[in-house]
Image (cartoon, rainbow, N blue to C red; front, side, top):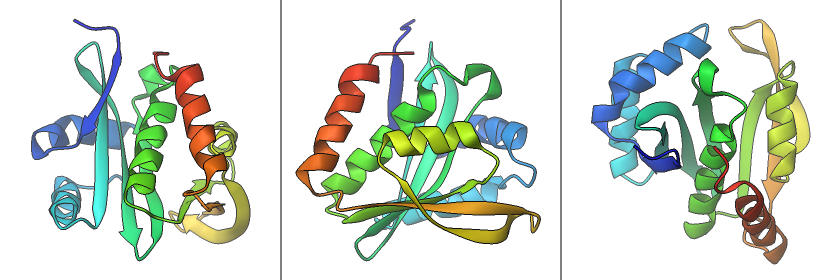
Length: 171
């Protein structure tokens, strides 16, 4: 069994294990039906989902939706016992790289205002705060809206290369 972190496209066969993580990390988790619908949108080119495996175990997942020339990170989740091992960074790198490959011009996401660790990771990629969505999460917690513009530029590509060179093999 490999100790290497492996990122691959999400498939229907992964949904059961994705739901285990979803239920462990979200107060209002998505159902298998929601994931099934999202995977239907992957086939239409409107979404992109990946999963992360460590030692053969599915330990995280992430997804993006595409709207015109923008990529919106829908979710990034890592099983609690596998956090702080570079899984979220690798997942976000995969999403960002795919957005560049699809010739998107910007990336955006929302993050809980209290989730400072996630905000730090997003800043590493170049995300900058752009606003707040009040009561966004469970109609109680605010979300910080973050953006990266010009992801087709040399600066962003160099940032992705630097992140990959520094953290690419870290698990």
